[in-house]
Length: 315
Image (cartoon, rainbow, N blue to C red; front, side, top):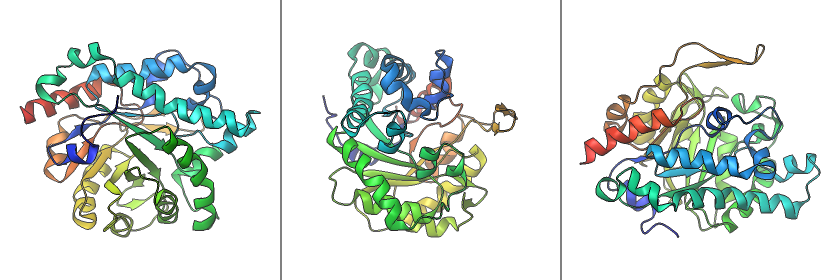
């Protein structure tokens, strides 16, 4: 069942809660994500785990469920010996799993949606950056040495496969540089599905070191883009980016930072303190944020706190 309202319509009526990090929830469920395909491996090997993770976020109050397709590509599945037909089926499965979780009526009543937030749950098909396919951390650097045209050719086939599965929105997320943002925006032109564009940043610049104002300005005047903003960054950096994204783009802002911890690649562990604080929602929404949630290491408990604060604010 598709939502009664479009997500763009919902954003005109107030803030909407996104889910949190899919990978950390899958790890909490006991899944091994050490494969190059990361969470996308489970689309083939154990899709029920993905459905369970989506369900945990529905219970927490998320109204947008992001699919397990961030690292899912035809090229990545080919490395596992899967042909294009099977890879396309798995991409479609990612959308179907999120849709099924959102349609569980008993979960809707459990979080009081009918009284406070409406009955709609939207599915966002994740389109991760080229660097996610490489599985070498380069999505946090960008500047892959490819042209905009080459990046567009890489992204277009899986975008087409995801669109065919009828998500409510495409999440062009964790984008490290302006060239890849341009390529993604070209690849989605004419696909008939709205998108949000979300950059991964460090400090006041893209991960590739580019000016954020220029990055956000890329979507100005593009009707297909319903929101722009940041994800997979520290909460502090996210908070500083929200008002800039709103003023430069003229769009609602999407913001879903990490927990604040940092990944130590050498020792393969998270370090540092958790700085994600649901109380930031008031600052974010006052500055133009309308899609709010969490990324890496932000789980159902954090989303539950965000949801509770939004329900209180919109009561």
